[in-house]
Image (cartoon, rainbow, N blue to C red):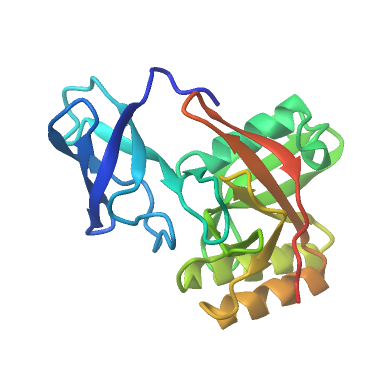
Length: 241
């Protein structure tokens, strides 16, 4: 996924009300941008961080700019890493990777449906992959941005009752012999594995382990992130300590 136009650089002043961020632009001036991430953004919203914004020319938008990327300093490392924070991108990134053969585990399907109603708890699954004569594959996608010093990505970055519910729904599918996949889209390129953030949300960690035991497939891919675009690049393991 390439950005449609060059991004606007700036420095984060503050992120607040979950959906808003004040930014000082590198070219001068200050603006309020939309923040397309409702999580805690653990480690990704420090004031003073360098950020990049996309800009819309739509006359109906209240905030013309959308926060896309942030430069994160990781303790113990000399170099910073650019992280994608837009939670609206992962479904598209996974669909692109599946169609292009990058995520080979999801290859071979002719159609992809988005935001499909399913399950006993009135949920929506992010992607349903289908082909004639082949069982459907249900894929729930989670955006991962949090990481710790030793290269471990963590999910979730805040308590996620919705995430646990999705895992229960996937577990029920797997128990019926339907292919169900929990896919972690890691929008940073400096980590080697994904783990459940048990210290943040032990209930989610429990649900994830139960889903794995029920036959839900756990996939994780880290992305190559730059100001030109974001694309999934390499599979990394999901580790359940």
